[in-house]
Image (cartoon, rainbow, N blue to C red; front, side, top):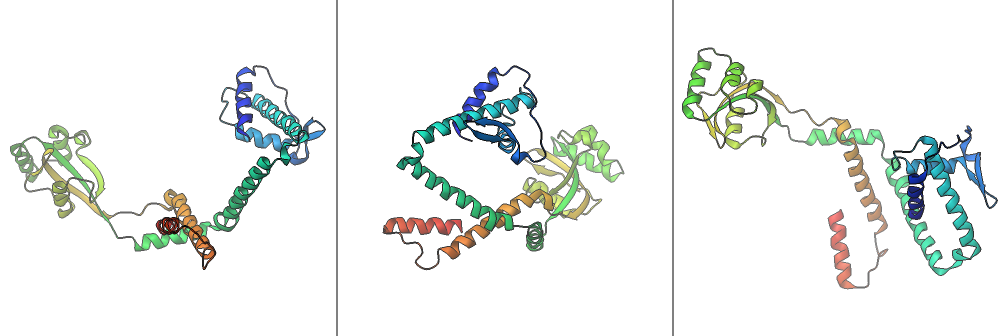
Amino acid sequence: MHKRQFAAAAFLATVVGFSAPAFAQDTDASQTVVATVAGEPVYQSELNETVDQFKGQFGQLSEEQLKAVALSSLIDMKLIVADAEAKGLDETDTFKKRMDQAREQELYNAYFDEEIGNKITDDMLQARYDEEIAKAPKQDEVHARHILVDTKEEAEDIIKQLDDGADFAELAKEHSTGPSGEKGGDLGYFGKGQMVPEFEEVAFALEPGQHTEEPVKTQFGFHVIEVEDKREKAPVPFDQIKDQLRQLIISEKYNEVLGNMKDGDTVVIEDEGLQDAYQAINKQQQ
């Protein structure tokens, strides 16, 4: 849809305040004629496509009003096209050049869809997911609680209470100055690199059920840490990265296809400097 049509439609949307008549429905939308402009039919399928393009742009319009705006835009376009043809604008060199460019772009898009994008199947994505997961390094996670206080003496007193059998979560609620205090100091599961180094080193060294024997000093204060569990980090679920995998495989396939097309002397660049820059860019893309 041409940008001038959208501008016209936007104007119409601001003034449409009537209850638009219902359009006839037909099971064979491609053959249903909803209007005639200069003897040429406007099909229901054309109207449906235009409505789809306009959806979301005019939230204040009802469905029938949106159809009216879409139909008005189609009629405007066909009237202008008919007059442009009558004036021979489709025979000018400028128009023909634009059509050549549009044809190249649409052929590029068609090739990309048919020869690359549409050939990426769910089975291919699943296989690539399994391959990437299998070779990814395993990562451990720790489920820990902590109590953060301002002084070493406070932390030592809490450790003594824990040694005497006090409940860690209750002590955290009572003493911790950290945001997790109200949750009993529960930090949930975390992997390496998510906590400050001093805290992380101690947490990963403890076994489930153990708490620190000495306060752990960090930039935030003094910590008492207790580890509840350790586990191997689960991989990202397939559904969460399916789209990213598709884009990755499409990119690889695209480069492979173009690489084969560029073999030999298919591409010749006369300017040596431009040739070097072209090769550098292609190397980065691959």
